[in-house]
Image (cartoon, rainbow, N blue to C red):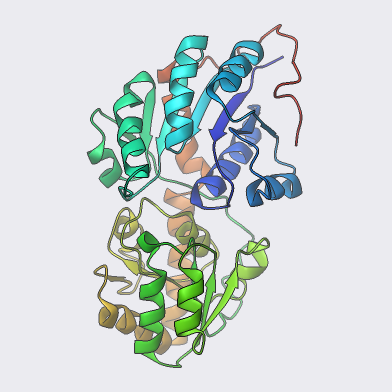
Length: 355
């Protein structure tokens, strides 16, 4: 039996990392490669575990300790562990080295978080020499102390819907925390005025105060468990982030022919330049962002159609599974992964379930 590729994550909510992992497991399956999401701990009420169950994505849950992870690696003998996030990265690389399992780590975070998370991020960077490194943007790669392969996030292309009229609705999709700029989104809504409906999809520590202050103009929907239907309600994705890697929400919107206006941070400039409009603005510049929104509103139908087709084509050529997966598999091989390797190990109960 071919050994699995583990995608190790410690997560409760559904964000960019979790959506990337789901996309990666699906893309590997298309190549005939067995993979599963391995959740470091069982978080009560986990939105991501619920999503994995609904999508029938192979996954399992560990005991939430380094010992449980090391035991699972020694008994299950996966072909490779691919870590995402600082906790999975630190523990996964050390446990993988002790168990003799190759490890690849992807660095997603575009910001250095405050204490104590920022301290753990530094440990994550320093210990990254224990495995192969991938960064989702050049800016992230530049912060790591050793060389890192830059491989962008990717999304599978949904059915083509660029002929469907876009609703006059502007959306924020993401975690409501400072680095994502939901407060700036609300200020932009106030500055631009009632030229469209303003929607926020996501949750986080800033939701309550922002809802209290801007509830008269911005609609707060909370976490969406049905993003495919949510995307059909979006006419423009507005991302006024203070820091980014290469956000999955931007790729998901563009793949559906939805224009994206965003701060010029992280991997967003390389993603949005050349898409037939001036969609970038400096982080924190509310007036410039409001101007980008007005340009979207004023686009002639023919110009908007061109932007939508360009967006879809850009994802297909540069950010689809066929564009990204060969580089990821190359990183796997560089770490010591042997395609087609098999194992006679009997599957234990540690990580053999699908839920």
